[in-house]
Length: 368
Image 1 (cartoon, rainbow, N blue to C red):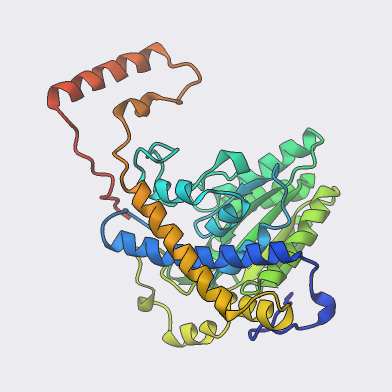
Image 2 (cartoon, helix red, strand yellow; image 1 turned 45 degrees about the horizontal axis):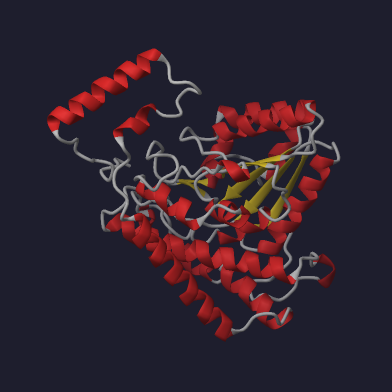
């Protein structure tokens, strides 16, 4: 397993340390802290009934290291716990939060399920609720880039449970057979909701699954942002050079519940949380920046946390003022040119709304 940083933030081996600029190192750390604080605040919003559903990535913030090797034109197919990747690549905080509220501030007009973040300017594709369908989608986009002789690559993210799905096999097999420039990133956090890894596969590691499809599989420490960067960077370079796909397994642990509807204390032994708390990815990277790189300090850290908390609060205050999406938006941007039958339906609905006075907004009553 590739590991660059020990849990205390010291280097495993100086020769393994990747060359990353000070600006990018600080941006990686900023995004990790932002992601963690967002998770805390947004889970509270859900508990307060202000948003309907939330999925945290607590303990898995190091995944942001996978975002650094990509270019603007590349394609990102996330699962539920990759918002750090979107935020690092340029997903605006307001866009992120507005999609949780699904109100008039939301660029997706409240059409999406909560946590289905999407942002076209950075090719950040909405997740699909069915498990692992993004594996085949990413393989197809990567193959299209190859056919067009573009240097673009695609990455898709999924969990250990996703490797048991048909779409995982289909996407991996297709990409392997045609050498599609695609990176398959599995966040092995050891639980697919409540199903432990040992009931998911008989293989020792998920990375080994790549062998069956004829391409490389690598395993990285999923709590080490530099190890993730290193593993993904090498995979991206191979893909751009026409050497085909790579399966990257990030071995980590989900410190929070599966979602705001889950209680992980029902199935996960408490000693696991104690064990993995000592491997916290943010504290590990922070220690590296302070002790080894000497580009960070405790004072800076305190200021950063306050700055981010204030920014999150200000953005939530702004977004929460939004009203429910206008009824007419149901019919907008469905087709390039609105067909006659949608024009009729829109006119009928607006007429009904005028007669009734208003429709009840039930967007916060999300069932999951």
